Image (cartoon, rainbow, N blue to C red):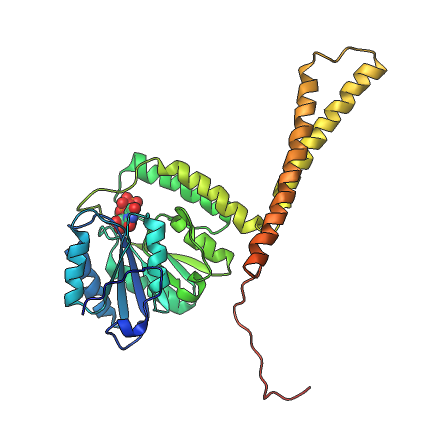
Length: 341
Ligand code: UDP
Ligand code: MG
């Protein structure tokens, strides 16, 4: 039975699906214009998952492909009851495609990978081994990465260093799509923009434990990469977002206020010095650039502190309007049968 899913952000109800057992593993694959890869992807993935032997589902999110990808996928669903295809109405980007997949995944473990066969489905047991050890997030590390050096591996090396330092979640390869997550951790992670690259850091911010394992990587066989070097700028900007929201979303005044105080204090000290020159030594200060600097620093300082206060108010609106707690509970235990002490 083919199921046409009109609204991908509404979870698929179980009776729509023809499967009886709840999967342990949900493989989520965002896909955009990858028609040549689809048959190979499906067969390689199915072979690997069958070998692994645990119940699974494969969720392919067609991110508004303009080639024959969706038709090919629809055909595959006729042959494979493990396959679920979610078609987005237009190209929303890889992050949104991931989010659509996550929202519909039912397995305890969600495994993500690319549709372009660059990842090796036979690495899935390696990731699962680490999940079984108790980690919440296992990131693939393309140790022997098969991409060009100058425009792909080098920027990626710099980005990984930067992201690791800023977020304190040290991974060699944030960019690798082959990753495994425990779904209960993932459900606390909200994705926007292109934040899929930061999921391990975001998941760690809600208390998930992170590790990595070396995985295979192959050169792209069909189609072209969907990204150019311009993503470096977006990664840098996203890093600022992740850093700020991770550490300061409940206390923005600490960032803006600190900068504001430093700036205002600098302006104040310079101002005092100029006052001394004017009143103490009788010098003229009206034409000195330092005077402008002092004024500028004080004004910027006041503005930053005000921005911090506005941030504090927005934080309250954000959390209280949605009844959002500022913490994430792992579990609550108690025992009503226990003896009174
Ligand atoms: N992708 C997507 N939507 C987009 C861009 C990419 O679903 O708007 C998918 C793409 O089909 C692939 C994965 O995301 O499965 C990663 O893209 P790509 O291989 O082009 O990135 P790279 O490996 O070059 O970083
Ligand atoms: Mg790729």
